[in-house]
Length: 263
Ligand code: ADE
Image 1 (tube, rainbow, N blue to C red):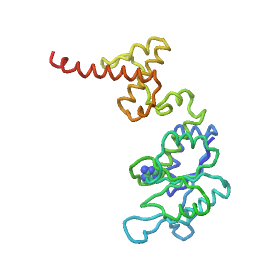
Image 2: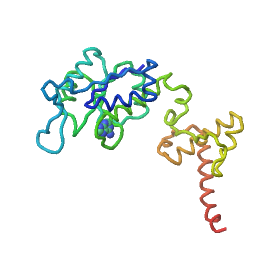
Image 3: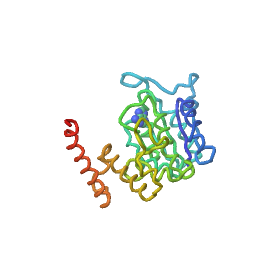
Image 4: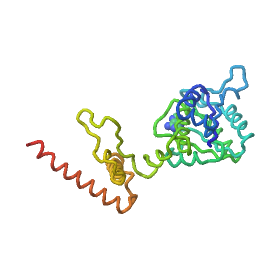
């Protein structure tokens, strides 16, 4: 069970994704509980102002500290041990290990979604001074218009790791990044499509051979697309032999091709 709060200026953006597909199903199954809160509801002036111009000048608007901190206070009054997550391109980068940790965290996760040019720095410094740990997390080296999509990415990647969210427990175990390898190639019907056939071994019913083929496919795919994942002695000795064979076949194919072209 994952419990989250999302503090945002655009609650409908977050709710529309949460009410769709697996995230909606996870809530129905009681495996995910999310409260979406409009930061503006903690702004007390007549216009419910949540942002203002930056001191020192410059483009854009900055989110004011008071409404965000009041929203955080209101969650923490009910859940004192909540884990605060600030979505920000300057944060540490979210990855599968981070998703795993979020999916297993018994604390409430409170996502603060920034917008416009950023959040007044005192949101972070005041929370730190109050002894509240703040986890600044980025989903990648690019800048989004706001933290909502980032929070949803983190929630989505974490929720699907909770046992029972996906129908088939195996589908988490065998996929990309659970081990350090990318996923093997997948095929479905028809057996032949535009002269491209499904590999015979997958039709053989020989489960041992299929497992072996898939493992080799994973290694080959990782070697071709993300060789960085195979560095630093990441592979068991058996896998090193398979990889050496994949590399040798690749070299043979490359040296074959000029001959094939000229014949
Ligand atoms: N807000 C804007 N860009 C972001 C990113 N890359 N990750 C997390 N939050 C963001």
